[in-house]
Image (cartoon, rainbow, N blue to C red; front, side, top):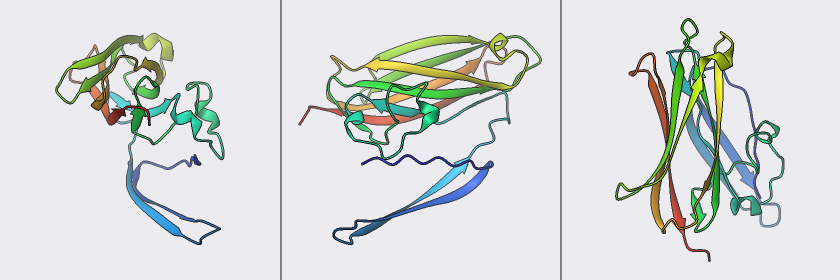
Length: 183
């Protein structure tokens, strides 16, 4: 069972605490997670975390759907980072472009590298500041990544955004994951 909860936080450092109890056996558990919420308005370019979903992960039912992802992902996001061979990944990330004074483009590159360095997926996208109509804002970046033919092993998914007006203005996020044969 999957439970997706969303809450709005101001930029800063937080600790998230989640506890659960199983009604039948009274078994319980808890998780603590230190979290830093970035200020997406600082610096020339910022990026959200990467939301991932997959066809096989969608088999786990969700107690409640996150409506904000319904328009950008075909199924609810998952925290799983182990996927079956032949699965299909979906990702969504937002790139926040804070340079409003000059028209420009932003290069968005998503790659998947095997643990030996081989690139097994690469996609480049170019977005124009004209899309933001002179305001600060974000580009939604959604991808579908078929994993047919990709071998079992460890991988790193990386999404990078780089402004063409300042090549030093870039941001990247990485998510490690594993592909394994179906049980």
